Each structure stands twice: as C-alpha cells, then as structure tokens.
Amino acid sequence: MPELPEVETMCRGITRLRGETVLSASFPTRRRLRPIACRPAAGFVARSLRGRRLVAVHRRGKRAILQLSSEQPSPAEATGRGVFLVIEPRMTGLLLVAEPPTTEHVRLRLRFESGAAPELLFWDRRGLGTIALVDADGLDSMCGPRRLGPDALGVDADTYRASLGRSSRPVKVALLDQKSVAGIGNMYASEILFRAGVHPKRRCRRLGGAEWARLAAATREILADAVALEGSTLGDATYRTAENRAGRYQERHCVYAREGLPCPRCASPIRRIVQAQRSTFYCPGCQAAGRW
DNA sequence: CGTTCAACCTGGGCGC
DNA sequence: TGCGCCCAGGTTGAAC
Figure (cartoon, rainbow, N blue to C red):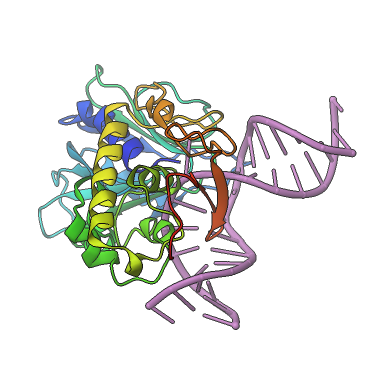
C-alpha cells in the first residue's frame, strides 16, 4: 500500500517525536498471527532501543528510517553514529501516533520517557512489513545506492535515461524497480505514465528524450502533489496518516482503479491490463501505443 | 541479462 | 449465513 507519498507523510507525522527518549519498546504478538520479520531478533531490538533518543526521521524510497542516538554504546557499534531502525511498511504497514485500526495488528510499540509524547506504533494487518535495526554500514547496504536507485521525488530526465534508458523492459514494469528509481509503486506508476502520455507497454530503450523529460516531470509533480495531499486512501484500503487521517490524493487519480470509467481528459474508457502480475491502468486515447 | 511464477500474510468483496 | 475464490498500494528468490 504505502508508496513514496504515503511513507513520506507517515514520516512527517512522527517527526514530532524527535528528541524523545525511548522508555520501552515491545513487539506484541498474537497467537493467531505470525510474528513480523525483524532483524536481529525482536527481543534484542527491543533491548537495544531502550534509553535511546530519536534523533531524526528519514525516508528512502518506501522505507522509513528512525535514527537513534548512541547514548547506549555497545561493542557492535563502534562508529558512534547511532543506530537506525529501518521500517518497510510493504502492503499494509502504518506508522502511527494515534489509535490503531485494530489492536491485534500492532507489531511494534515505542513508549517515550516524556509523558506528553504519544506512543509510536507500527501497525501491519497483513504482516508483510519488515523491521531491521542496523548501524551505519548496515543502513548503507539496505538503503544505499547499490540497493536503491535515486529517490523518485527528485528524479530528472537525465537520471531516468541513465538508469532506465538502455532497458528493454516495458516502462511500467521498469518504474517499479526500486534499484532503478526508488519510491514508485503500482498506483503512482499508472498515474505517472498517464500524465506523461506514455503507453505502459513501451520499452524503455525506445523512449526518446522528450518522453523521458515528460516522465520525469510527471513523476516529480504527481509525487509532490500526493505528498501535499497526504497520500492516497482508496476505498477499502487501510492507509492513514500517522495522525489517523485519510489521504486526499485519491481524488486526483486519473486512471488507477478506474477501469471502464471515462478518461478525465478525453473521455475514452480507462483500460486495465496485467504486467508482471500486477494491474496497470491507462487511457488508450491519451497514451498512444505507437511502436513499443 | 530478462521474464515468470510462487511465496510471504490477512481480510474484504463477490458469486453461489 | 457460509464457503470458496479472487483481489489488494510490495518484495524476494528460484526457475527458465
């Protein structure tokens, strides 16, 4: 569920906890539910977090990164640069400072020393999300440039061309590759292609400079607008901001989840196809097929 | 190199 | 009401 705008919104929502010191960390479990993936083991992470101060909240692609102080030095952490809690929400994960949708799917609970600070929760219904506690080197191997491409919010035509221009893959599939560009998911990929007027099946290597320029501009504009509107909360989906507000960008969607509805620009019925086992939505009138 | 498929999970919606 | 099936905003790794 959460793509770059949703993760960015959740990160912004929890930055109010900067400066707070962790009183306790717990990984609640329920018999019916499989524990969430955590590296190292949950008990170790919980002990490691206690007493640390939240220094900063970062985002890289679709991952939230909580930077914590090294006030509790350990041999494994000689750098003094602190530790990083990397949270990947995947399909249904939420970072919350408000009441969770359900109590049984709370996966991590951080309490802070100040009584005034709200609890920080990681909630995840499907449980596909992951949590990792790493040092600076671990952070680089998880979120560094070898693992994740340039952040989509600041991508330009040259960057797109450099990372995707020689690929023979369909552009829709390539936009989802986090190693090429980080932060775009299935929903925004369709919206970006629509705004740029590029057919999702076009092969990257067949795209020209003007198309890459339109794609880069569409990427920046759509993601920035979506951040400004706090992400997209679709129908039955669970995405909420950290303060439990629904996003508002879904009202701006032109093609995603709109199969059969008229294109807002040309009124052609929106089409749905499947690429790499995932739905793609596009307008056959505005996104010319041309030569793939 | 690229693509395809299954797997990881829960739960909502739909047809019967 | 219930059951079975399909679907979902993501990622990974194996197989071809």
